[in-house]
Image 1 (spheres, rainbow, N blue to C red):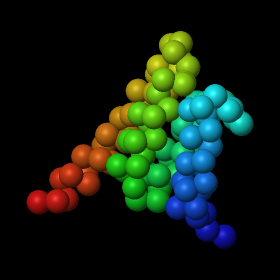
Image 2: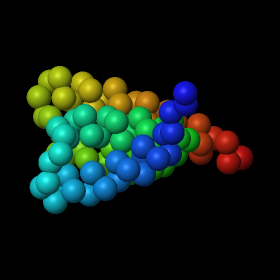
Image 3: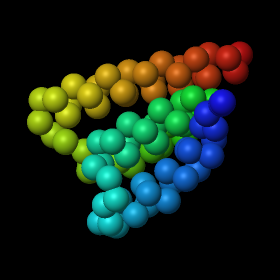
Image 4: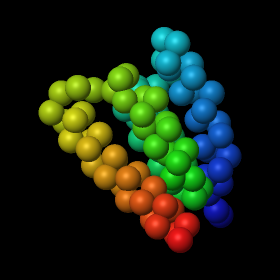
Length: 88
């Protein structure tokens, strides 16, 4: 049984859009984490960064939330840097 991260990432787009207009189906932190992870695992680091930035203002701002955001951003940034590095 294989995970279909592309389908998951594409499905998450609709939830991200709805979250941005105030329609919350799941907590913003969970949606951001899942949507970003799906993009990364689907091989789309630019899409992961786009989702991360789009959802950032909606996520927790307490110490735990900030830590989780920084950790996720580190993973996304590393994936983007690898993509940029492979263009040479």
